[in-house]
Image (tube, rainbow, N blue to C red; front, side, top):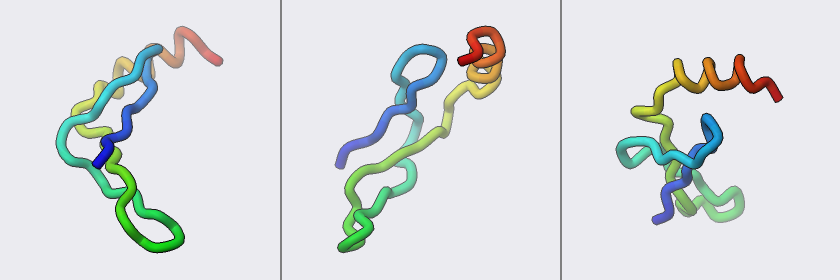
Length: 53
């Protein structure tokens, strides 16, 4: 099952753990997993404040 990455601080990063299942809206099957566990949100906020848009 694919694990989605997060685009933060200018790069693609994978969170820790299995994450939450993302379900197909039509048939309810799991199509991927996503997680933000273990990501450094303090650095994400600092990056956003410095870079802006």
